[in-house]
Image 1 (tube, rainbow, N blue to C red):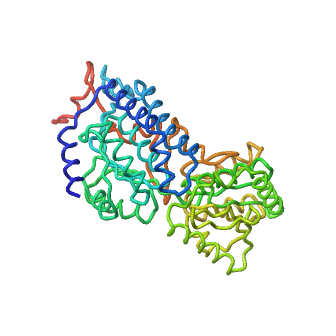
Image 2 (spheres, rainbow, N blue to C red; image 1 turned 180 degrees about the horizontal axis):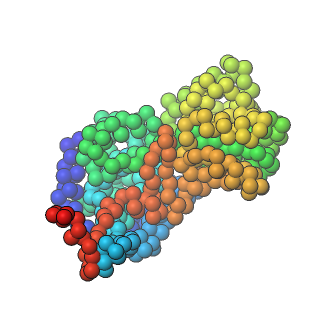
Image 3 (cartoon, rainbow, N blue to C red; image 1 turned 45 degrees about the horizontal axis):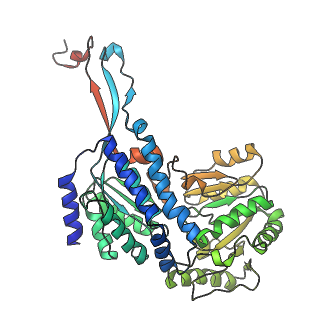
Length: 446
C-alpha cells in the first residue's frame, strides 16, 4: 500500500500534457510490448487457467491490445482536434467556441481476471491516447498474469508514467480510495458498488463495467443461429462478461434448438482441447452447484457432448443446457460465467421482450433473425449496453466501437472515440471576438 501511494504521488508530480507525437509513441510502445511478449503471455494464461488455447490468447490478449493501440494512434489527430460549437453572432459577434480535449491526469484501472491483459492494457491505450498517467491493479485471481503484466509494464514505461501494483483484496480496497482523476473498474456488481462508494468520497469520476444476464433472443432457430450462440458460449468456457447468459426460444422450436446444439458439438466445433479451464476450484464448485440445484428441482439438464464429464484436474466442465429453469434458481438470478446455457421458452416475441425488460438492463443483448424488421422491433423495445444481430459479443471487440453498460451492467464507455473522450477533460473554450453584446449582462441594467 505504501508503494501504491508513492507511485501515485510520483505520477501526480510528474504529470504534464504530452504532445500528439509523444502519445503516438506511447501507443506504439504498448503495441510492441505485447507482440514481443506473446509467448510469455500465452504461458501465463495457461498457468492461471490450467488450460487456455494459445490461439485464443493471441487473438485477445496480444493482438486485441495491439490493434486497439494502433487504431487509437491512427485516429488521434481527428480525436484531439477541437470540436467547433455554434456561438450565436447576435450575442457573441465574431467569437468562436469549441470543446478542447485535455488529459484528466492520473488514472486508475482495476482489471478483472478473465481477460487480464486485454481489459487492463486495452483501457490503458484509451488513457494514453488521452494523455494521462496510469496505475493498474490486476486481479489477484490470475497471479501469473498479474506478475507478468507488472514486469512488462516496468520494462516498457517509467513508473511515473505507467505502473502496475500487485496485491490482494486489501490493496484493491485501498486502490479505490485514492483521489484519482478517473477510475475504471471491471468486475462484478457487488464489488462495483463498493468501488463506487469509495470513489464517491473523493468525487472521483468512475467507469464501471459490470456484466450481467445477457439474453439471446432467437425468433428463428436455425443451424447458423445455434452455431453462433453455442460457439460464443464455448469461448473461454463462458468466462466472458458479454457471453450469452441465457436463450429465449419459441416453445415450438425448443426441440430444434436442442438438436442443433447437439449436432454442432458432435461435429467437433467445441473440441475439448480448446476448452478453457475454469479460473479456480472455487469458481468450478459454484458452477457445479448451479447444475445440482437445477437437477434437484427436476429441470432437464443436457450435456451436449455425450459421455463428457467434469475434469477437476483441468477445471473443465462440458457445455451444458438447462431447459426452462425456474427464475428463482441461482442459474437465473446470477451471471453464470461458465459453460452453462439456460434455454427459456416463450409463446410470443413480445412476451420474450417483456421478460428481458423485467430484469436488470444487460451489458449485451443478442437477437437472431433473418428479418431486419423483427430485429429492429427487438432493439427498439429493449435497452442494453451493447447489442448484436445474428451473432454475439462482437460489439465488445471492435476497436472503433465504444463499449460499456447501462443501469446495473455499469456506466461509462471505453474503447474508440468514446473511450478517448471518457478519459479526457472536455473543456469548453470561448474566445471573444468583435461586435458582441456581452456587456449587456453587466450592471447597471437601466
